[in-house]
Image (cartoon, rainbow, N blue to C red; front, side):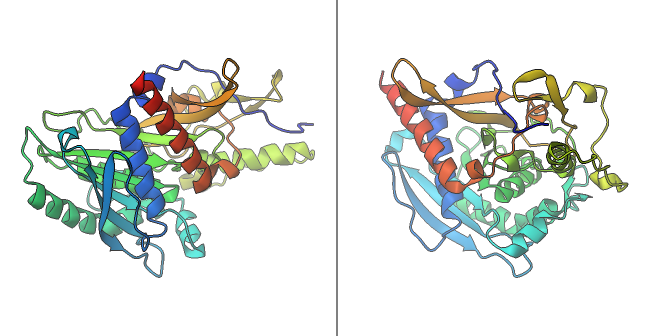
Amino acid sequence: MVSHVILFFEIALSWIDKISTSSTATLISSAWKCALGVYTPEETLPNTKTHRFQQIYKVAASAKGVVKAMTCTVAQPIDTTAGPPVLIIAIRGSASKIDHVVNANTRSDYMSRDQSITGHAGFVHSAEAVVSEVESQILAHKAQMRPSRDCPCHVVLTGHSAGGAVASLLYLLLSSRDDSDMRLSCITFGAPPCVSSTVNLSAVKSGLWDPPVCLNIINEFDFVSRADPPYLLCVINLLRSMYGLPSLEPSSDNDTKAPTTSSDTDSVSIVNGDDDAIWPTPPGLYRHVGELVVLATRLDEATNAVRMHALNISPTQLSQLLFCRLSVHRRACYDERISLLASQSSVSEQR
């Protein structure tokens, strides 16, 4: 009988240098500040050593939960030579019972504005409900900034949990626009998968300046980052096996079945560290948009201090992991790890 699951993986740390650069770490930290602040929009965001934050617009969540709460904040660099202000649009995650009802609408649906985009129906409908407001705020910001192709304005979409999934879908809708004077990025935190197929972001335009950033920041072991119907059933069956109960079969509803691939039998996770005790993990019904970056804390034996590692993993690698902890999905946990990442980046930059 399986007594518990050991969730651990070792992969190349090729992305640690990229994430730890000052500019990227600062952008992640600023996005997180707004993703956290959208839960309490009435409070003023504190300034940091590098940026001043000014909330310029907010939207309250609708009674039925389809429209998620949203804030628009301008992050102004204190050093005016560090670049233009960044417009950060944050979508709130689940904060009420009705939000969870929207999240539970896991059937597949397409975007009415772009039928090539299909995904989690609850998140698709939420993205479509606010996209007009988002476009209006971007236009207002561009009118004030007067960007050009050589110096585009920078807009960042962000959100925690379900808010991150909606932000990802908004990113797909907006990135299809031919805006050469706008650099559009998306940084999410603990977001569940939300699109039906892998998206090629190579065509996303960003003027002549830095390429857009599209990152899914995931705390190691975060259950929500893997939450879709096939994975939920996988975890339920794992728990049933611990009590000698037979596995449940997938629903006959095609919208809750993961696509079958030739590598299905290769998708397994180690249980109890025993190579002979494995639990098959199915391919997901939905996928994330952009790069997957797992934040993992490890004890540095040389300094006896906890260090943060930012690990870039592929969708296939993520599908082979059993992430089953809800505690690391909490906003407080993401706040702690993002702060540690920013601190490490600052120290590395000074060396």
